[in-house]
Length: 410
Image 1 (cartoon, rainbow, N blue to C red):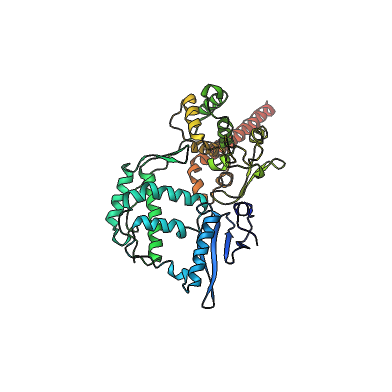
Image 2 (image 1 turned 30 degrees about the horizontal axis):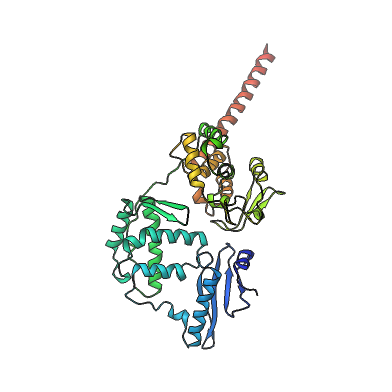
């Protein structure tokens, strides 16, 4: 048992099995840690002789203090003879979609990773609430959802949104955004069904728009241009973290957040690994090539800051990559390349070098091999090239045998 402070929660180790850390100052208040690395607050109590647990919310979406206040409220309800676990679904039938979304973020997605919840929060605030938030949950029809999808595809919710003091989220519409957002909406209405707010899910019979995921990777010539641009950072007047972050992204195939949030405690110099406790697909080890290790060894350690790429002030991590990337890609003259395409480029090089889809998937941290199938055609090309090389070698040996035979006859 321990006091559930931010330090305690951050330090909670990941184990092979789910377990709970109980707060020693408030009985029943606890933190559940999952093998995936996800952490979620809960409150446990007894009602009519039965032990019940109720999820409060995931760490990140809820601070320890905020979760404790919720636990206090739940305890007070129990002391008043109420059963919060059974009552949490007894929501007013006249609830709006906007209010439902708030409840969903608070209690309906405790099973999700913190990063996923933050993504959901963004889609709710930028797409779902503006278009459907005013409607009553019980009144939303499939026609409303179809109109919702069309509006996102048409870009009616597109725009720039401030995220904190300096952050800026550029929200775009399109088929991909519509498909992902309507998927979330379907999950929210499934939560509404479980909460007895309606008997059906209006999203279920709506056809999601088909879209082709954008596949873009840097050619060898473009990689050369990128390298040239990165070798002259002073000419672009940008944060000193930009160049090493970009280099590590393309040298490791890591996701942006995995590098920008990288902490020194996760770097294993001795064995050449990044040992990440929490990624999109759970804990994983990422092998480092010599070039990536060299970059990490050259990084200065800032006292009082655990991050490899620290913020300019405070104890946080560097976040202003997008502005620097805009300058880098302008200097390299490929305006259509996104930061995520650096990851695609790493995978493409692996595929062209003859590595299997299984190997590529492991290095990229894909949980499902189907995610890696986008590189299958490149693996096929490398296999054909390997077959061609083998054929030439065999044919050359036959020619040698033929020449030997002619020499013996003469």
